[in-house]
Amino acid sequence: MDANGFRAKCEAVRSLIETAREYVSIRQVYLDRGFYQVHVVSELEQLGVDYIVRARASSGMKGRLSAGAETVVDDYTMQRNRPPTATVDVTVFAVPHRSNDDEHVWFVTSLDVDSSTAKAYAAAAFRRRWGIETSYR
Image 1 (cartoon, rainbow, N blue to C red):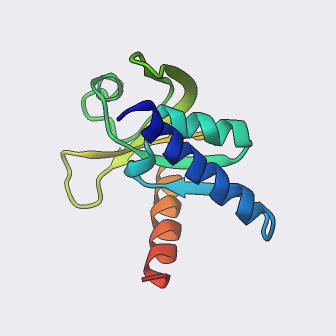
Image 2 (cartoon, rainbow, N blue to C red):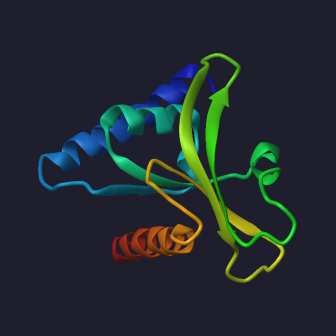
């Protein structure tokens, strides 16, 4: 994706959050994998909102998953080395997939997460996001 593609997605996120702030208080923002980009996460950081973004697991993330581990919580640096470059420090966490025992669902967040709260955050992210999506179909 070129720089304009990154810019368009970041501008859309910024515009939506700024408009929403005119009417409601935003506690957390939940985004699906389509928004898992370092530039979007950096924009969320600049806006000062807490977020949970569903992530596509990279080899660096998967390397954090030890054999038999149920959950993973770790500091992680998202980065893009090709222009337009960007980096942002986040917390990455993974929980077991609900229906496939051999897989995990990965997220990046600005929230304080530990292994005891990771499942609750993952469930909340899905429950709230799906509730919103299905109510606007």
